[in-house]
Length: 363
Ligand SMILES: [Zn+2]
Ligand SMILES: [Zn+2]
Image 1 (cartoon, helix red, strand yellow):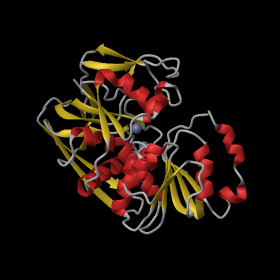
Image 2 (cartoon, rainbow, N blue to C red; image 1 turned 60 degrees about the horizontal axis):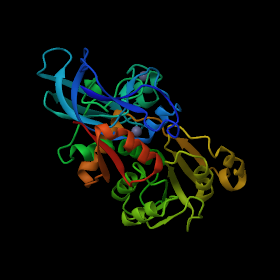
Image 3 (cartoon, protein in one colour; image 1 turned 90 degrees about the vertical axis):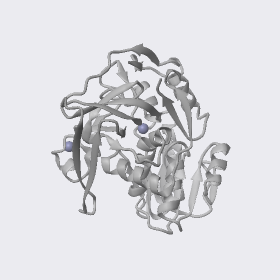
Image 4 (tube, protein in one colour; image 1 turned 45 degrees about the vertical axis):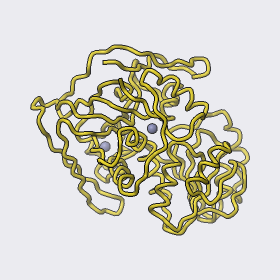
């Protein structure tokens, strides 16, 4: 198969072509796994963190990509006909939910950042498999979807609703699912105000989800890019302005998706008493870390303001996000690239060139 491989870590500036196209043997699914013929794979900012070593893959070379859509070709148990997986998920509210994912050869499925978790620890048993110490990440700890084929445990493949095309579904598997988790953790109810800091692949979907789930909630968007501010207003934000601008009112919750520190400090300033800042970023870059010295306890933290980070996703997040998108008509804005152009897609993501999500289409 053809695949784009990461063979060496390095800064994109000095190392602008990090991936190389290679012909590799097709992977073989093990027991309990399926082989997927990949059709599309989203490009995520986390891939920049992997390439530049902020969340490095444990082994190289590795195939990146954790927003994978494709068709089931084969089961590792050899029968190749049909297998049934039932997933028990216990929500935070102790509500026991069963998500039935019957998968058979020929079905369209997606693979997200969660490639596997132990299933036995306290976190897994509580439905917080995203916090499992043995959490295994697609396209970092194991090969992902910048390739024509990949394997994944069948229980961690997600049926794709028929309403979504392959390119629409791909960004929902990470940007959408982690955005959905961030919105859950923001813990707002209908009518409370919501701020979004950074307006790329994830937060533009959060805005659409928030408008559907909380129709009376007003959304305020902070972005350094005037184009993103216009984009946010066109999607229904009541206000959009720069990162350091004071919002027209204090906000009940803010979701930050930027890779740096200044927006954290500024968001805390715009939070209302008792408000919550949700940081949806796997790593922060150190370029402006000294901005944290501007942190002023009375205006930024006091009055019971909270900061909560978002780590990974659970299968529940992925499946509920796909269902919500199908139901609510939420479709990501995206731009397609050929798999061979993955380096260009990553460079343009780094430069923040194109709005919405980026999707690789496999040959
Ligand atoms: Zn991602
Ligand atoms: Zn576990």
